[in-house]
Image 1 (cartoon, rainbow, N blue to C red):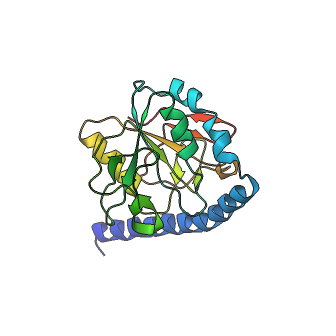
Image 2 (cartoon, rainbow, N blue to C red; image 1 turned 90 degrees about the vertical axis):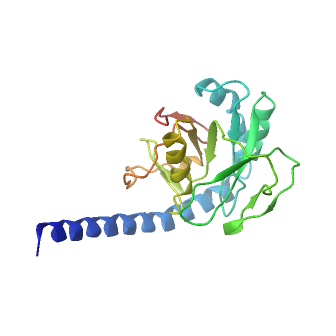
Amino acid sequence: MTEQSSTTRQSSSGQDELDAAKAALRKDQGRIRAAARDASPDAAETLAGHAQALIERLPVTADAIIAGYWPIRSELTPLPLMAALVARGMRTALPATPQPGQPLVFHHWQEGDALIEGLYGTSEPPSTAPLCVPDVLLVPMLAFDRLGYRLGYGGGFYDRSLARCRAQGQRVIAVGLGYDSQCTTDPLPVEATDERLYAVITPTTVYGHGQND
């Protein structure tokens, strides 16, 4: 066996272990998030109360574009927070989910605008809605850790979108939204393509990390 093939096998084995660890965490954290949703029906409205604190923490202009998401499964909805940010002068957008392997595409959107059915059970603006490059992404997640890393569903859409913006010289900040119980005690398993969040907002706290640039 050559040295190169041995290294390749070790690398593949390490990736398999990482994938397995993430898959197990997704099952556990999915249950934790669903339980948090059922126990905290007012969590999104409570979280929206952090709108001003978030604005003061972010290095963006007063009329920045904030891209949210249309919630699916047990995701904590960002809509009350988005409304609170609009009330303070910011503009809002939603992503359109592309085919696997591609970055997200963002369209201007505000409450009351049309939506169509998207991939994976979500809703999104129609392709005719104006395109935009957001300044801040509000990101759903299954879990997050104290270092600012998140666990998603494994599609890589947000990581890929942030990496593309960086490659194009654009600064886009990612802010995770979640329940307090989604914060893990131990650091999450991460790989080179996993993007670190700038901050995480829960109903009780705004965690700052300051690493998305």
